[in-house]
Image (cartoon, rainbow, N blue to C red; front, top):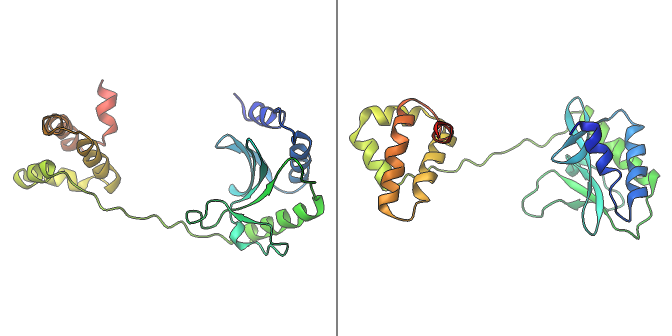
Length: 199
């Protein structure tokens, strides 16, 4: 399905607020924003930076500002997208009964565009999870210097994927079988994806 087909499907869906969604689309397309589709929803960008998305759910719809934390929000309408999880994203939430105030939405969108142009962006902080090695793998690494050398050369994400794959097995025999299966790929410097490609 092409981008245009996805956009047309979104903006022609059978929801009570279809007219409002299209009003929002017209408003967004009248700006310098570029219309795209990401994660199955319309997303509007400036210089490839996500500025605002449009979402429609079972009981509500709205605008999602990717760097909404920087918006003034004088009307105090913005909600945190996921309290406790989302740092920067904020959204304007509407239901079927809400009347779209184009002037108000335009003020939020214009400020979001200006913020994007000014480079106001919350840095992404990735939590570094410690790799929890199964005892069986630890022992193997301790006893095999070559294996240890290749394993430590892998990225943390690849190390974690191997450790998780082995740890997920319930029985020791299955863990052993998985470890034995992984060793040749570790020695080749490959990630766990190579396990599935071979089959």
